[in-house]
Length: 140
Image 1: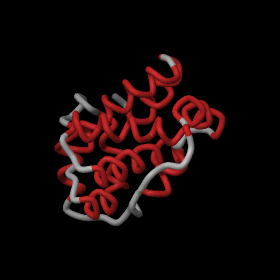
Image 2 (image 1 turned 60 degrees about the horizontal axis):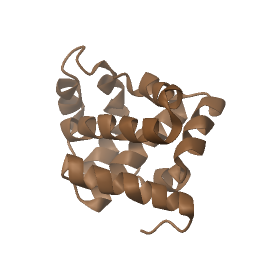
Image 3 (image 1 turned 45 degrees about the vertical axis):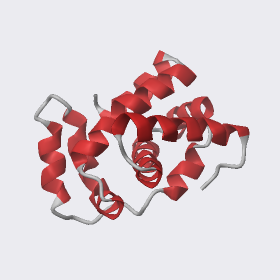
């Protein structure tokens, strides 16, 4: 899927970083990033999320490309163990993404490796304040 706007090129850059740094394929990178941004959109006040969307651009298209989340599965356990107690505390709330992870063939541990890449990217585009808004939802 190609993004059609200049903002889409920003998303393509993020997807490229995820493919390279997390060692996933393009579909997994898009879907996993979309799941995380959808989680942020669902958890944040609309004004806070729009700061992220403005800084990064193309986020809504990325969210639309994410698989449906939800549905309990064996991934709940892997998500909880990937949280490593308080080490990555916020991954516990990622349990709601289990269905989407399963369809992408991603583990909770792999998705946890998306978070620092995405946060670094958001910081580079929107600064520390915008990154902190996203980090507050992902709890890293």
